[in-house]
Image (cartoon, rainbow, N blue to C red; front, top):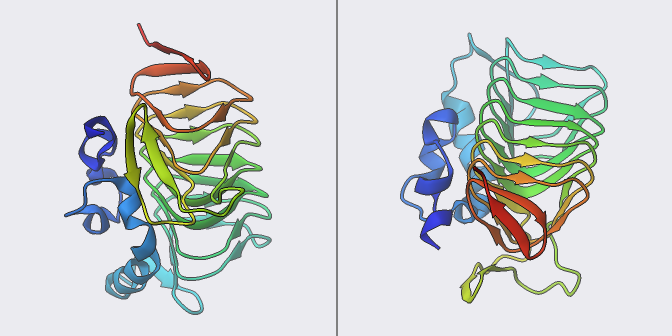
Length: 221
């Protein structure tokens, strides 16, 4: 599972939440701590750069938030981020600098690194999206198994018990998810990988790959 550690998937210099990940091995280990971390970090933000709006919501003064968007705390919206018409941020969400949260996109218990794009009809729950990752229109992170059992991360014969009932997807830096794809609970995608449109994805997908369908994953040339 070494390929899917924080060190090998994510550039921690590209998130305001660097401290949240420090001392942990895998990115999903941060999921239970996101809300508490936001409250702590928010209190330390420079009020000249971040405006506090309501309970536990901090929005960068350079960010653009549509009047029709709903932002519930705890939440931090980073510098130059854009939250568009009818976006729904349910809470426990960090939106990185320069990121885009699009129309009718819903976020819940997530860390979006800088320059992430979830721009059209996306659901992202209990997930971490690395620097410059992008989810195509209508792609979602499914975060609860249909049998409601705890999520197990699987990479071939290797398995890690997460102890989490809710676990969406972990995307490394520069991951591209095609339109209409469903990332099933416990999906982990390595850096620089592309997912074909309309893909149902589960388990671990290696870095620098193209996911065409289950059993058909090729390395990028």
